[in-house]
Length: 330
Image (cartoon, one colour):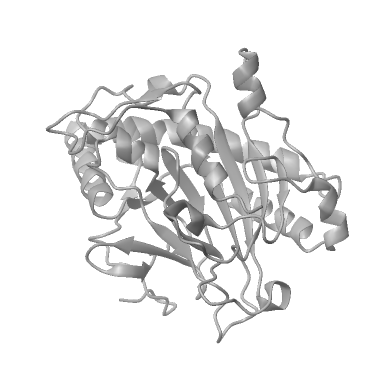
């Protein structure tokens, strides 16, 4: 199955596109139908495409364009902003291998990232030391801060809407997830996937991002399509190119949400292919928002009949720190 541009897509029965507007303003039947579609999709693949999200496409374009102007700078100009996984600033080549989270010793991911996180400090000094550090704004791209903060404001609103919908899709009270979001942490990466003229020829088993699942609650992705783009894994089809709609955002479930639902919903396994041999100069940029909880949230599996597996309760941020450390190289 292909879209009009010839790019293969996953059949809609696996990863549907849903309009969020009925959840905001629809009647009871429309909301119930949407909730059923979401529940079914998250059981199958852990992924959705969403329209009606309210995020300005011009903001998305400008943010991507501004970030690119930083990524194409010489390395010596970017080096002062270098950080490690989970930090704030520039995550350069060779710093991260997402396949490590699955226990697979892949070569480093073929990407660079600008990485940002929570903007407001915490009252508890231990939580603050562990989960808050000021975001780093490159002097070479002064407009990046305003654009990023506007985008993060939009993501915060969208995340709360999605979590409200997810509670409804499970037949739970509307604030089942959102009540754990009074002061959440979050991560935001702008990922640059340049061509082989920048990263070199891919090594065996090397990806732009290696196979993995995300770690938190929900991930919201604004991506570009390409031959070396996103693939998702489903039991029915194995690895398949993800569906793409330029008006839609891609949403996937992370590990904590899967645990929370007692594995009713699956943490969406995915990867980003290396630069393709027949289009080695292909360049893509993704905007990736990683939703998380308020630090100290105890994630306990919803019991049967909603949940399927009773996982041991975990502290959300103990779990997140362990996962972030697992993908760090060096």
